[in-house]
Image (cartoon, rainbow, N blue to C red):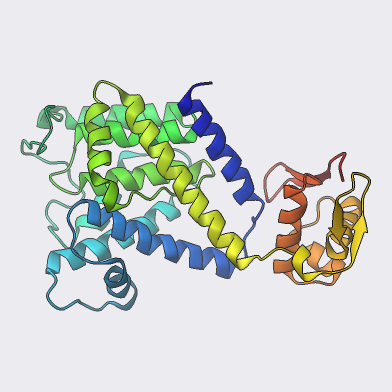
Length: 331
């Protein structure tokens, strides 16, 4: 197993840990989306030289205020990116990727900056500062974009989600179909690919701009360099989210003193044993039904199930909507 495959395995394991928290309560899911709405908007714009700080970005996109002394374009970039971010969630569940999806992302991001160019492929030649490689000729952009969409739809279920997302990002940037905003759209597409395949988004902080640009340039001859960089960012973002989850969930066991001994010497809290018994009798029950059965709150059920999964006592078979719980041999 090479280093990149090891990172795929680590990311998959992190994803399994995050899955233990699902399904999240609607209010938690909403707050997480808003958290990353600000975080991704701030970092993606900062990579391109936007001067707004993260707190200023939050004020601009959530409160609709302007920041004194900051360029108007920086405000437009923040508002536009937030709208494009919302859009990727609206198409996460749809089948396939289309050119219209990509054009809509650019239109939402660029509308206030230049309405005439927003959502339209460029009709002028452009050069990438600091790069030795040319981007697609104007006459070839439509065909290149059709090929990109075709490639994505053929490979979405064939490649590892990180390889899929990194390659989509790379191929899009090498085409450079818009007169401006290509980096922002590339990172939105990358995160759309991750979300559609059960992953969280990946944040690239501005402090890593040099490494990011180097990875993109090197990817012309060694695409695995960019994939490796994106894998690191996926893992880092996963670990950040796991930390946030754990801070909100200071373990069920710490709040319950009475425990039930199990055969292997480890112990379960009474709540965990009660939930385990409920799952044994009702493996298809939802979180809400388990909460009603056990007489506890839904967040308590979510935390307890996470603990039971971590202990290896239960596992989820199938999707959140149509699957069921299975008790393992340990359970």
